[in-house]
Length: 281
Image (cartoon, rainbow, N blue to C red; front, side, top):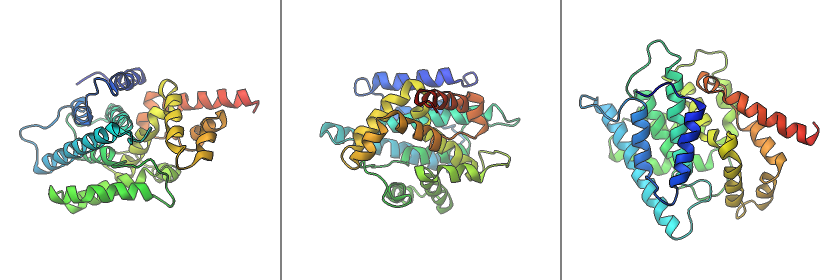
């Protein structure tokens, strides 16, 4: 396994994705495979039936998303932000957070655990078939993604208990629920096997690339472009420094031990301080 993850390595991985985007794009199945290798291997010959089913579901969802995104790209309808690159960003970020969390544990797995596999499946599906719109009510788009995924999980005979856990993890990625998700684990021992803790890692992975200095501003511009069609006033606000400040203060929250190890709270706070200073706050 590679050495302990660092923020520098994560930024390099995110930049590599951007270098290949549109030209030389590896595809989401390859990104999934790379994340599994990062976590100690794709699928061992002696893997349990549960591991094999979760692996199959994750890879199948990645293929589905890749084919759908490529087709929409050919017709010019793939969302500017909620596209295959965003999904790849979140997968790479989650794998990095999971490995960072492992490095803090005394008895960490050396191959992908069941909880980690559930997290990767939820992450690859969390914006499944996103149409570039904005939630009109709580978890609208996240529920839609989970609904799209369910027939595949049923076809592959994913146990109902695992399907329900994946659905709950997907619903947790609703941006409006971020403070609530972090509050659930406050003061508790952080364990990836606990679904509340795993949800924290997913919501952190979802906004990680948008938080970093190197990738954050371009991603904000892409999200504003996506919102031009559905919420032009919000799109224009996002293009302003105050919009960036609002995102960092209210949505870019990091509380997991893994995120602290990577230095993400400090990265966020430095940008907040700079934006406030520029405004004279």
